[in-house]
Image (cartoon, rainbow, N blue to C red; front, side, top):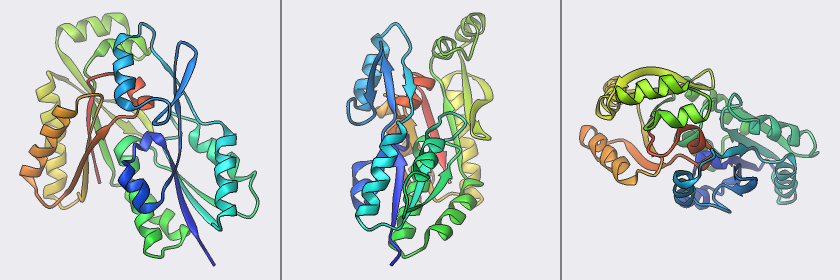
Length: 280
């Protein structure tokens, strides 16, 4: 009898209700401050991470899960009677997590692991996980699930607004001069995922204009009937994220809309104060 498990990583930042409802399995990535590693959601909460990020002088680094973490999980799933796994992960262009999961899959006999590179992360990645879990609940097989996720990938959108250009500078993504000029001009770059990589989309002056630009793209897709789920994602700005959620709900009350943090690993790249909206 076929029995399928759903596996993902902690950058999807699933809420506990979803994990319990759909019995999803997570493998944590880590952030490293001053040589000490903290596993997302286990050793450090998102709120604690952002508090620490604001006080640390050195930018933290990130680390993918060790292959042994996936091997142990896959072995346990096999012992629990699972025959198949759908393993959904953040973009392979920004982390080796997907490749590590696939390497672990080849080490475990008697279990078929179907990998899915979301080419994105955070809440849009969670959308894929939720869809896969719902399909398992409804009796779909892993091959059909992967095919459906591939179709959804073509429709997924996510745009991020970075609050502090100096954070991008510290991470090597902007020169000091660019950050200084951008800061003086109040430039709030809009970023998005393109071919699995975080790249600039537009440079906009002021946060309000940046968010209005993202909302205009969302509303255009809503009006075209292309949107069923929306997520507002934030780097330690829960009040602003909730306000954006309410603004979107006022525009369309039929959508499933949630708020959540950028996980610490993604927050390391974007910085405190960043905001994003994802939909599909």
